[in-house]
Image (cartoon, rainbow, N blue to C red; front, side, top):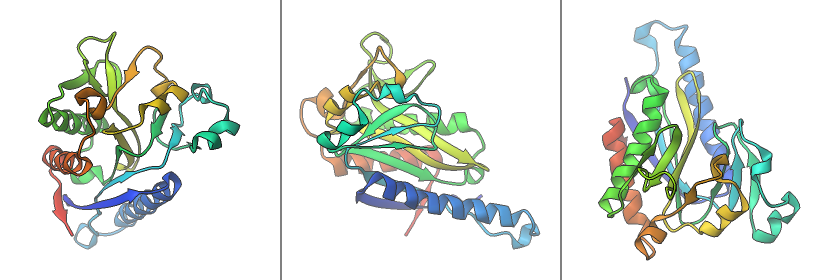
Length: 235
């Protein structure tokens, strides 16, 4: 069980470019696992683990089980709001990515840690919940809904601050989470976020009343993820 993990910060990067980047890593890990099946245990190669942080220019992404009708703006008008749109191979419905949002892509072999996708999702949520607590925001989960919510124990005014959507194959993961820090929330008006009609969306900036230091939030979140998963950082 190789817990060595490389942390990579891509900065502001086009969604498709980041998708291709993590897909290349994902395919390489899956290929190693496939090759290992025909090798004696002593000759098998360890699989790699990566945690990628980035931001994206304005983009809407739809999960493989999502509904195109949850995009509320005609596609031909996307250019006018400087946004793009992609159908993806992750789970979940429609969401928005943009500047001021931490997008996290763990591309890991879960067999290096545990083989439980429910636990995997909950640990990502927990790392975000604990990060928010460090900055004075109380957040939690809502039964039956994925993601992290402010005012989670009162479902009527609950506000989503982080969305999750993943893909797994042979226990290798890709895609991940989108965490609203200084996000322009107006872009969520163009969609029905995650296909949920009766819930609001928020950000750390909105909850705290001022822009947050992105680097400080990233560093805190990185440490919380390390603690939750047992990542051992390597260069």
